Every structure is written in C-alpha cells, then in structure tokens.
Length: 325
Image (cartoon, rainbow, N blue to C red; front, side):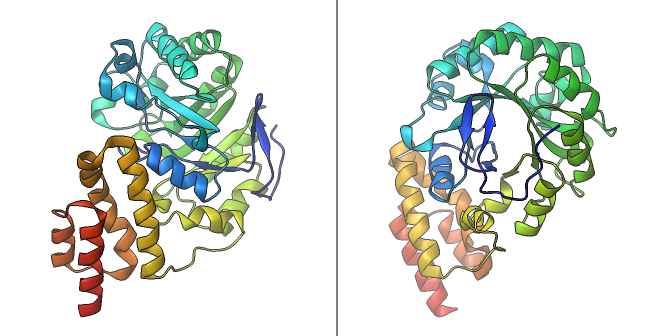
C-alpha cells in the first residue's frame, strides 16, 4: 500500500529513480516536446514526460520519431512514453529510449484516439490483459530502468483498471498513472478519482492520479487519500505557473500581460532550439489561445496570430490589440 502524504513537495522514488517532489508533467500529444518539458522543469515539476513515441517509428528509424528521443540534461529526470502493441517492438523501443538517456519508460495504455486504438495500442491494450502483461514483461526484461504505465479506468464503458493493474504490477511495472475516465468518455465528463484512491489502496507500487486536478485543494485531497503523486497536463497549458502554485500550496493566480509575454518569449526560444525557426513559428501558434484566454482576445487577434511569423511579430500584435481593447 502506498505511503499517505499531504506534502506535494515531499520526494519519492519510482524504484531507483528519486524524484524531488510529487508533481508530474503529463504527456500530451503534439504538445509535450522538449520546450514544454523544459518549461515544466523551470516551474518545478519532479518528473517530465515526453509525448507518446511510436515504437514502430523507433524500429524503422523514422527521423521525426527519433527526434522525440533527443533529451537534454536540463529536463531530467524524464520519462519517455512509448505506444505500440507488439512486445518485441516495444522492448526494442524501450532499449532505444534507455540508450537516449531516459530515466523511466512509460507505456501508453490510455490514449482513446481512434488512429491509436485501431492499431491495438493505447487504451485498446486494456481489452487484452494477456497482451498488455506480455508487453510490460518484455520491456521490464529489456531495460535496467523503471517501466511505468499510464492507463484509463477502462477501455470502454466499464471500470476494469483494478484487475489489469494488479497483473501489471506482478509483471514488473514500477508505477501506475491512472486517468479515471473510461475510453468511451474520451475527455468528457468528470474524472472519477474514487477509482484512483481505490487503486492506490490496492497496489504496492506508486499510483499517480491524473485528470481534473485544477488546484491545490484537488491535489491535497488526492495525496491525503493515498495517491503517491499527481500528474498535471491540460490545466497547465498557457499557465505553467500552475506547477509552482501547486508546489507552494496556493490556488492558481492571475499573471500580468507582461509576465505572460515574457514567458512566451522564453518558451519560443526553447522551441526554436528544438525544431528550428520555421517549425517553431507554426508550433507556437497553437499555444497563443491558451496563454491569452484570461485576456479574452478578439476574433481578429486570434486570426492574426494564426498567420504571424515568430514571437516578435505576435507580441506586437498582442500589445497593439490590448491597447486598443
């Protein structure tokens, strides 16, 4: 049974990997690249996680996939999340991630998106417990670093996480992250953290709770109920200060436009370092809406930002719009 704590700043271990606190940055497809992970580290998270990496992309040396395994010292400790449905291929990808410097390997058993499900990966693995166990056992045997799992309550409408989690623990999983929505829910409805708490009570390995954790009250409640740590993803989009607020035990605060733009500038610099100027311009455009949502940008400003070139032009457009507004 997991150790009960209410202190998010308290260190904990996933096997031999020591984490400085109980706050984990969630993997988000198309979002949690290196720049996002570095940002999360700047605001204090104990563990960063890559977006999901295709095991077959690793096997066939896909250039864009291999880029996702390029880690830098400042983001450690870092987990590389892999997805796939073949034990041998997943084990091979795990070895590649370990060689790239990953501290932890995470297995995606939670993605409900159709293009992932139809390959037998993501949440689809929860439908085949035997295959899920073989995958984890193969990966545990392949590497010398911890293998963890991110899963949902169940692949369809029923909660089936308990039986699978027990089997995965026996197969060598070092921790379980539970997003307590079913696959059928996608991201709708409310995360049912009674599932997280019951899972934490049932397992001997750390249980990390994810989903609808929007402030310190939510975080403290889960930690006091027996969850080992919490994982934050979408609530921190455009609000990396949420990480530091949680670690300080404070509810999310409001930031000035100057503070927000200064952070976007730092973030953009890291994106340029990661993927070059041209790709960075396109990548940053998806983030403007999240950073500016509290300032209620006009439709015209949103449209202009979608065609902006680089952060300097975007900053000029934003300041001009805010002065006029």
